[in-house]
Amino acid sequence: MPRQQVEEPFKINQKITAREVRLVGDNVEQGVYPTDQARKMAQDQNLDLVEISPTATPPVCRVIDYSKFKYEQKKKTRELKAKQTKVVLKEIRFGPNTDEHDFAFKVKHAQEFLREGAKIKSYVHFVGRSIVFKERGEILLLKFAQALEDLAKVEQLPKLEGKRMFLYLAPKAAVVAKAAAASSAKPAAPADAKPKAPKPAEPKADATDKTSDAAPASAEAAE
Image (cartoon, rainbow, N blue to C red; front, side):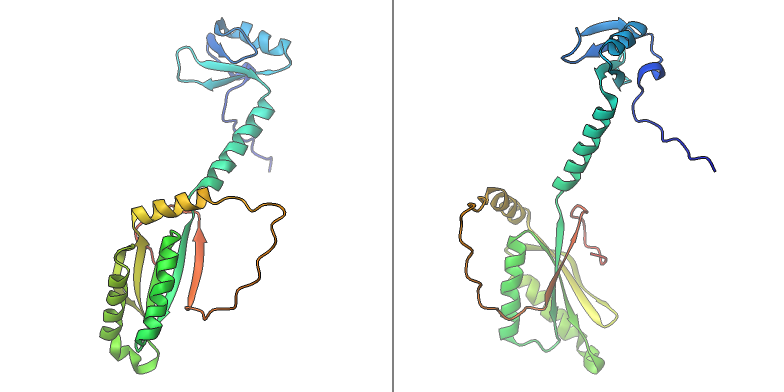
């Protein structure tokens, strides 16, 4: 089968159908010209006449290298995607019989995650007959949310799904803003800086992280 031609996002040269166009740019004398004359001005510079604003009256065109122009447009699109806020989701796991020491330890880690701007998916995992203690799991998750109420808002209240009960938390707007400001203000390390000695390993908090390009939204179990 013959390959289908990809439609260009901009009209160029002979594809511009308006009778006259407005030229803008540094390499031409700006003004309104008959389209044929504008094409001739582009040809004289070995460039293309590109319609950049077709809805204007008359349409606005530039005399540029179209291939280079498309490359710059793609580059800008990539840069915008790279600057999009990434949503980080941290998971914290509990058992229905989590003791106070372990609970406090996980609250501390959750506070760190929230201050970094991450969301939290916490859950109680019921093994075997421990599912009969689902009320205990709900109380535990609500207690967890209450311990973090200064930093987080609840996106989804405790909900049982299979053998796990989930609670979703998101950092409050002020916390997110502070995390973003701290990240942008962090100075780059000097080239001759000596590497710091590694810190001794700390006990893990049963937490994992997941990153996506989607913008923050209401709780989604798929996060």
